[in-house]
Image (cartoon, rainbow, N blue to C red; front, side, top):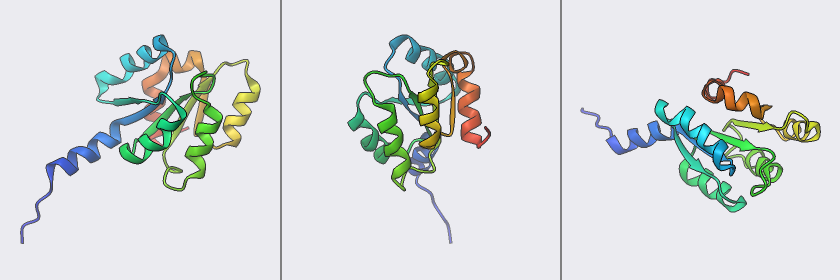
Length: 139
């Protein structure tokens, strides 16, 4: 008996392991994230609005989500609630960043189950390392 696999299914599975949903609307910061991740085979899907979250989570099955907790276009707290309350998404790690001075946001993100939260500066300096750490389950 010969077992054949569908190359599209294999490619789709490989794509989802490298697909990241990115809730970052600051164009300069998004460009930094792209610069750090695209050369290493990551595929970025931008979350532009609150409605994008469930739709893209369901259709893309991303490996992880990156969130700017201070983004003005996306309510990051509501996004985290969506991600952590829907059983289909609870195993998908979330890497978030916020201003180091915004202690309340850090506490709120942790209480909502963010997998890792860092400062904006650390995210800028270590984007790829941080993504690879959350994908491997390291904290």
